[in-house]
Length: 195
Image 1 (spheres, rainbow, N blue to C red):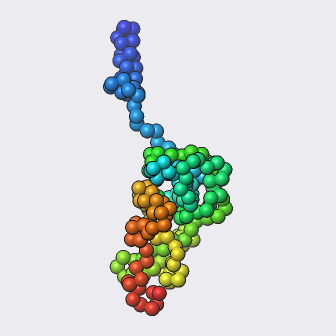
Image 2: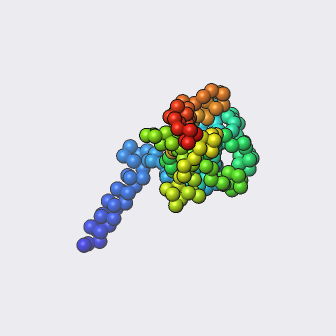
Image 3: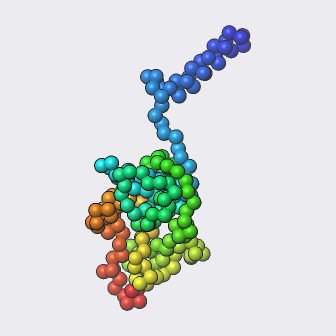
């Protein structure tokens, strides 16, 4: 290969890589950079109308959501101490694709670092189960009574937009259709041994 051919090939490769970076029309590529999901990351959740809420990444797939709707920024160090409204499993892309931008990172408070218990209701027979990592040897769940499950979140992985709906509804003091759909169906608890 002559020097001229080598230089021409190198220039062509460089030009192709620059087109990939810049784009065909000379506009910088808008492909967002993926963000790593890290425990402690603080998220800003846009609720529309100039309002936002805050959340903090916990162990996969959990995210801790803080109570309150804000129009102004809250000091980063204060966010992890806000009251918790709920802790939910959320699809990973909410963080990794930047749906909810990471604005800082702070250690989880000891309370928020603890894995919460969840419930599951069998879709066929209506039986209730507690879901938690302490039951890892039993497929992460064990049979439970209605009393044990009352007040717990249903084990589920939420879409980001459904969480936004729930935060808006919570702030407005109205029921949320997604949370209501996941409530325990007491009509299916026909046997006293299951209640």
